[in-house]
Length: 224
Image 1: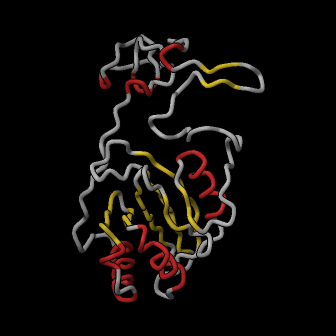
Image 2: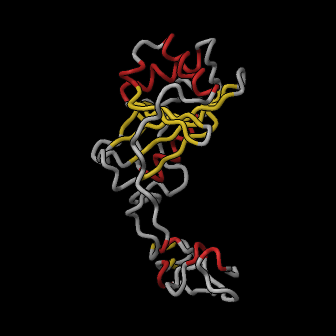
């Protein structure tokens, strides 16, 4: 990549991803600093027609909404409901079944790890829902602590959650209670640890079937 004046890179000199230089980390992530997640809620009305319509419908048909949802955030035209795990099953069933909501499809479920989150609940399960009836999208986010990483499975509401939850369990250690077969899906059954947690080693893990190792990022060769 050749840098210009606008991004702080010296013209005519190649750099690694994200402008990293001299670290030996060919990915560039060694110099990438992620901001802490913002815990503020968006004010009502949101100013987005779909987000307001979804939240208004939930208020009408789901009386326990205030207890189930910690906060609602609208950012870049997307509504995210931060849900308490105790309220997740009933909220999910309502979102799927109510005629005014009809979020029929769970299109994605993934894990996120925020080790420094102020709440102490570092592990997040993020669910992307689609209403094909109303052509709307909605994100649910549930956070749990490393000491108690359990939350209810959504497979009874959306069967597509099955393999998604297995992946989040395998790579982040989030335990989905009520899942019909919560086993590893990416790593070997006897693998120790969860590779996508932020405190997991980035390299030096033996590759048993070939006897090779992957060195840590700062020991990899740079191609700059």
